[in-house]
Image 1 (cartoon, rainbow, N blue to C red):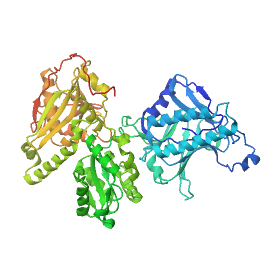
Image 2: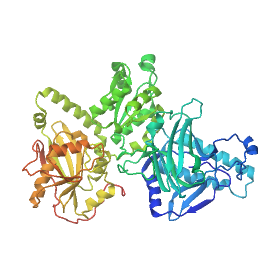
Image 3: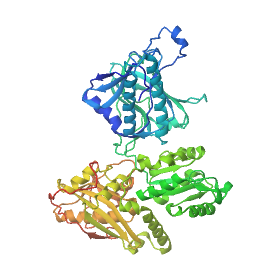
Image 4: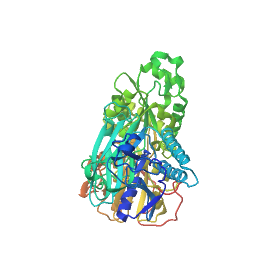
Length: 628
């Protein structure tokens, strides 16, 4: 987004190659959350308005302020790509881009709406029927309203990086700097050099490096400016914001342009939905401090109570990391009627980063699936310094927690029961501790059963939810869309989908896995499974069953696709345990044995009806929603 200025509502149309347009689109579509920085023309030597009378470079705009760029900040639309916007500029000496404000994030779609609204405001302020003084008043009002709107509607979240997407229309590269510094003169700032080569450029500057130098909660100045001979390069920016990358963004996508100076980072294969919220207690979950105010004087925050109940309905878990006396804190939770919602609470006087580690271990979920809420800046910084992958939020975020994209998850029968399933897991763990036998023997005592059924309209939404949440046991590293699942249900392809459900003597796990089999090559293209049955040999039982089925069709064996994402190493471990060997890059072949190791630990109920030969049943409605 940009600051509104009098006389700069006109758009120019720029023609770019298809390759350049694709690069510009990817910068936006690969983003889940983004800031909405309002960039404007500024000068490194500015002491306006006194410098207007003495500076030989002063060139007035229509509002008489100095034009720091040759033709101002031109609004750009691209021929053949009406969905893209940009700003084109040509730096003059001492010119720089600058934005100011608190770092607030929005859903990508909302940020684009703000950009479009700013353009409409600029057009309104530029109407000829308005006198100049009224235009100047309108512009000031629009810029002030934007700043307040961004501060009120945005929310606190930790970005992955600062992302720049820029097309350099010149034949030579441009050396640039990106600077972040507080508006208060505390002497600390962040600066990084980068280079914009001719044609398309994509620069990613890690947020962790920025956070190490400045406090992102302060009012900040953000600056982009050329170094030396970079002046006069014609640059078209399509993106210049802090971002949280979309979970579907491919791992290792090579950014274009020379980014060696910018120390670019590759976003992870997926930015997962949040699976668990870890709450501080004092002045976060409730108002007041337990050890100082006493139980009778505490008040449960209404917004926190609403968030806990609704997120629990969505299948998001809750835990606690609090510095308090455990007995008194648990009594307070019981008094407020919310104790039942919290799993593996960590209440004591140790570092909260250690508490976060124990919670992740006990719940068997990745730290990048955790959100931590605390009112104390010190505690947030301590956790962030140890666990950079954890979402760290202030107590103010409680008011908007339910609207954050990280908690926008499908709601199914399994998600409503997820907390109870974890309670059952605690009972299992206690039973194992008391059994006094080996783990495999204990598993056999649990009467584990695996039900294998066809993908259909009844279980499609749960499968979609599962594939969006699964990280460690996602063999292909991909997340299937609803469109992918609809195609499988329709039978319009040579692929079959198998839904895995499991239970034992302690309870029902529900739907815990899904596989897609190529019926021509007998290759498992996708397999993912819930970590709730990890290490319980359910996967061994499924692959043993599938191997037997494909051999009935005359196949020598079974192949499985595995692509490393950096977080699905447990999947490779399971393939190794089952004696699968890599036959070619990313494809593993089954061993030449009658049965896979430990496949008999779990009993299999085959409830499938679809033949392993291609068939085309009528299309059925799936997933209660449109395409992915």
